[in-house]
Amino acid sequence: MTSPAERAARLDAEDPLAPLRERFVLPDGVVYLDGNSLGPLGQGVPERVDDVVRRQWGEHLIRAWNDDDWWTAPLRIGDRIGRLVGAAAGQVTVGEPTSVQLFQALTGAARLRPDRRLLLSDAAHFPTNRYLAGSVARLLGLTVREVPAAGLPAALAESGPEVAAISYGAVDFRTGDRLDVAGLTAAAHAAGALAVWDLSHAAGALALELDADEVDLAVGCTYKYLNGGPGSPAFIYVAHRHQAGLDLPLTGWHGHATPFGMTAQFEPAAGIAQARIGTVPIVSLLALDRALDVFDDVGLAAVRRKNQQLGDFFIDLVDDLAAGTGLEVASPRDRERRGSQVTLSHPDALPVMAALIHRGVIGDLRPPNLLRFGLGAPYTRYADVVTAVETLTGVLRSGEHRRPEYAVRRTVT
Ligand SMILES: Cc1ncc(COP(=O)(O)O)c(C=O)c1O
Image (tube, rainbow, N blue to C red; front, side, top):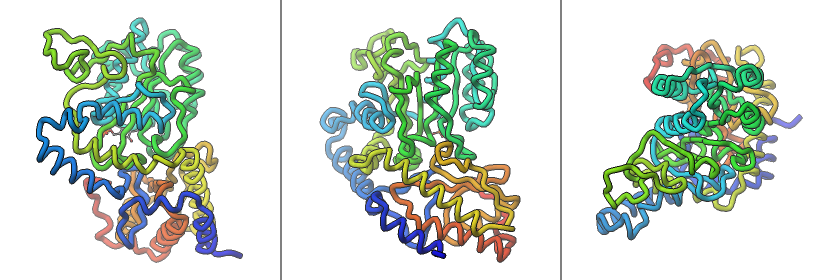
């Protein structure tokens, strides 16, 4: 019987994406499985940041807005992200935190369906999505009904004519469940509603097809699988067909038809430029621009194939090695229904993850008892999966996680 290490060696040797790992700066002695929270640093990004700060800002000063194309960067980089999510040019801009883009998207969608009073959203949605849906509802006099994705077709069949929009995540942040973007969007449309998707756990990991799937609006962060860096700005997608009738709530001057006309009244720019708001974090945005180079010659279909295979391998090893440790697989076993992470549950998840991180295997933790392992295909090796699962089961079998220092809950888990 071949050992896990031998299986991994063969899979790594056959992996067409293996050379991409060289495009990242990864510390020695660390197995990094938290790209679902913060992607790693790309080669060339520090140099780009240095250039933006020292030369563009330091030497060009205000002239950089024209000479270094700072002004056009949100739309130019938006189009680059568009290519990764199946969106033709002119439908994506980048600029704010995901939460702000979400507020824009949800309000914009509800205003496109002014006669309808219901927002359907996921009880399992990321908290910011739930909080903002509630706020948008209070502002516009709507009601939010939280419906699990599996119940969405039935809810749409029942209340369809009242539903303005549905708001779901393409991949569940806890379990990694992948939702059927095309199917649920079609179900929303059949009821006359719009579909707003959060792609934070999907962009850069799944082969998304926003245009082909007729998604209406979408948002996503860029610091997870797009590796943009801490706090890199989020994107918003508005399908061409909705842009003319759009009424976004945050009418900042960068979204004006003539920003330097300094006119008294807001007049939205044509196209996706109207979704710009104010001055973007240029250093962060241009770091993201460089980070996206990783995907220049890599298809998302190949990335997706590899993260599915990494996930299958991870789950196989858990099945083989973790019997009797209390670990359970909380992600779908079907690779088509799983995003780019594997989530395990364990009653002692908090100290187990702390012990694991101490041993150099970095994943993260979500309440109540979930251990998340992101599988960023461009830089994760099958050998890393073996190290992770062997270390995890080793920690549990030795009881190492019971040491008092691992019981401390840190602010960011
Ligand atoms: C689905 C989802 N939406 C939004 C966010 C975060 O939003 P923000 O960029 O505003 O912090 C996260 C963060 O992990 C997320 O998982």
